[in-house]
Length: 107
Ligand code: FES
Image: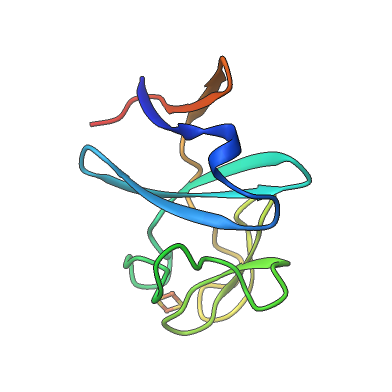
């Protein structure tokens, strides 16, 4: 297991990117729940953000790819709009322990 961050490092309604070993992931906190995904858009396989730690749309309601604007549900990573509609972000396997978030199976 690899340490990602403390749960309180991410504010409600915001997102943050991390590089753990060779894996780029990002974490969104919504309704006090952390959602972690690999930072790879299913459309072209590239990272989603243009500005550091900005993975959400302007309302903070959906995850947004900055390249072609694909929109994903925060809860599931399911793409609801854009060129990869119907596809999914890859969930990053994480575990919470003693107030911190850890990545399982980091390479
Ligand atoms: S690369 Fe993400 S929508 Fe095209």
